[in-house]
Length: 95
Length: 486
Image (cartoon, rainbow over all chains, first blue to last red; front, side, top):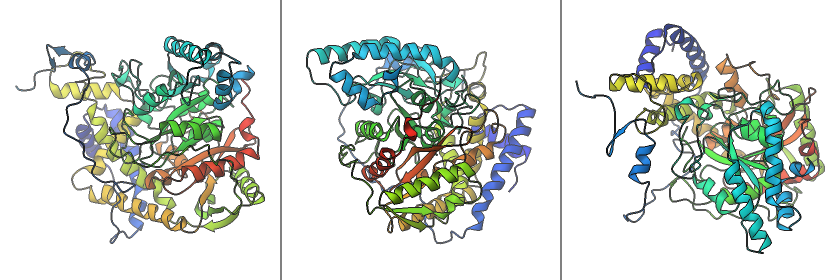
């Protein structure tokens, strides 16, 4: 599978990146090389192999539904680039 | 300067016996950092104020014969992708330039509870993505043995700091070799614990099915000590195993008589540097002399590990790094109009090229129409790699092989060729994919005088056995005592 400059535009938009034409060119050629390398996986027959999503057996862990202390609202808001009152402030979302 | 070249355990004994004060050690250490770190560039942030405060506290406790923690008075450095309360944590990224965490990572809380002295935060490849620390947005860390060479990465700052005696021990993190590879290249000990051995709460997530925190130290005993402190159950990380944490120093001197060592043929194939091969071959002879039995084994899917890794790790990274959106914390671009422009410009200006490359690769692999061909395929091959290890560990106690196919490479030599850079992790990545523990210890030097690392891998949660095998080598060699000339 090869990656075109149109593919790069598409993944850049999925990734929320703005790229210059020069960047698109460089990234396309680098990603092409990496994807070409990754194609070696197709040499293996994995028809009857289960995917390993997690390296070690894990089980669900439950806890009591008890109220615990968390980061204070003022503290959390103080990390944000823009706030108003008790809210994170962002540019207009709806036109 | 001799005191600063002591190991953490040695300096702790001196402090506890009252022979030297923690305050004096911290003072000497900062003097050395100010003198030398402008060449090495291992630290991003220093915390003199709290270091001295903690040192005075320890000195008072010792003077009053109060009980102290396991790491009492030991100055320690922390990789800058691990959250430290009220101390900047940047991940070496512009996007977190001003981020001051409101809480401590689980491991940092453990360091504090056990009375260590946190001296600062160390440099890394941005978001731990890289193998040379050249992807930092702030500075390029240099190899203490030769400053024209990289320290490896991504825990290059932590490894260089310990190697140059600028910290007695350090925390690093691994997703694909990022503790062991720089430890090997800087001539120090680096340990990646079993997946689930150490809580990741407060480690900025890169790839959640791979990430682990681990020790970077001057010798094997120090690694055993630090692992004991940071390992164990944490309710804030549900992947963290509820398995007893032993005193890893207990029985560490048990030797290797009768131990079966597996030599994986695939790790001695094309691409292995001649000096590395010689050093590892000599190390195997030492093990044989010490009474271990060498057995040739095969890990047939080794050559697919890097390909699997770059799908799995980047797919997870593309999801984990979507939290950096310029809303709740971190960098937001100026003069923005719409919400989409805010996301795009904040992320484009905030992230460096390697992060962008990986996030795009991950999104590509997960995108509609490609998921099965890439992510699902890679996850299946990942299982084959794990099964390779399962089979081998039925026959042997451990696997011994090189940590990195090459010693440190020159700064700028590989930065424009991402694939070549990725391949420097070919021997370390299989342990991350399967989740088994692994350690790198010093085992020689190249003709150019650059350190070479020996890698030891054991089965899940067999860190005690792994440390015993590593310690046996260390006790019979002196590679770990040969310091860089600075």
